[in-house]
Image (cartoon, rainbow, N blue to C red):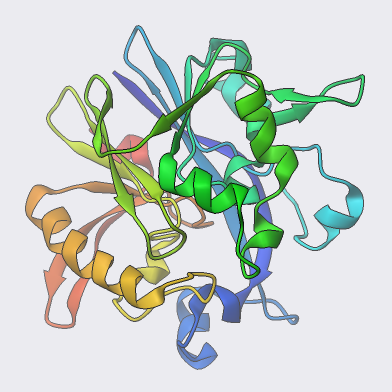
Length: 281
């Protein structure tokens, strides 16, 4: 099994929104902001190739949105989905499955592309798209708080393509790749747990744990619709991650791709921090 991180680009978000009730005097020491209080973030995806199936987890923001939309998020950097895939020896046509942790635009935008004739269709034409049932229902009938993050052009063309596979229960979706649901950030967020040939487990954290700076228990995003549920989910998952040595991959951390967790006198904190290629060996 081959597992790679795929960098799809960088963007900026307000630091206060990313760290919720945590004071800036604390969070800026771990994650610095610019003069406009904006922090820089990755849109990191994951590629898993087991020799038969090629799974892409999340797709970044894509490139079909207009310049006004992009200006709100200050997209920057040299990375793109296609460039990053090519660097690993793949193309969009090689992807057999896409798992979308949830349908916010920075995770699902790259799943659909705008065709030359102005219509929308799958950016990965040979792939089946896995989406949780609760998230699909949540996103297609959005609440007012999240409506701006659920863009119909990112969502409805998946169903129209006939490539959508709705996941209604926790299960193994492909050999050695199991999914679990987490509901604090948005309803029905689907997190993959990937067991490697060496017996290690890689967990792609989506927005359950967007960066290393969010490891302390109260450090929960203001974007989360149910922050107390997020807190409860962290409290349940983290001891399991310590005990089993999980490698947690951060989708949005600009500085570190992943980490392990360990017990400390201050509670559970990051153990090893670094690149996936380093920690997975």
